[in-house]
Image (cartoon, rainbow, N blue to C red):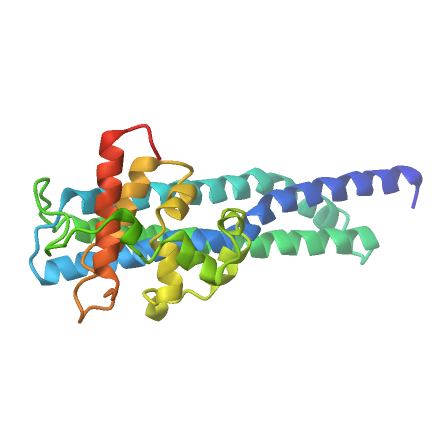
Length: 275
């Protein structure tokens, strides 16, 4: 094998490694994307509860559903664009090296076949991942149309006694999260949260360990790239109707969680520029 061929193969392999890294960056952040799937599941469960009980919920629930749909569609689009960006190169190299020159088992051909196989498997996985999320989003938006929303409805359908903010030990507090994690910084760096979200299954979504994450406004805000209004909408959806003891999404700490949400509403209404 001549030096020119070695140089060419080296350049091709470097390009393939770059493209695979771009695609695999989605794998490394995949588990953090699971939180979007969890939001969809919880939204569908609460929509069905609303319809079953013929409730006329607050307009914030509609906004939460739309926020989840918008955010999930954005990440789906990002995944698909990365696959489309890399596909012409891998397909061209595969056809050029494997097909045109015939497969003779050369080292370079085997390497290309391995890279192409990795790219194809990962791409198919993520295409299926985005497809099934798209189906769930459509389901969520379709059943949402059956609900009559009211802008003047009460945020929560129970009476809450007043408490000082420092006395409200809500489920998503930093203190409760740091019982599970070493620091909020590690949450933001996506290290520990991946292992927690990996354990999340439909039957365990409402256990306290998971609720610490799902009810923390800062984590929701961070996941939505700093969109304050969308974080508000989704936080409300996570808290509302959690006082119904016979429902799967019942949370024993519902009063403090609701109080904390109302405190945030007052806080942000006084200064719209605050987080």
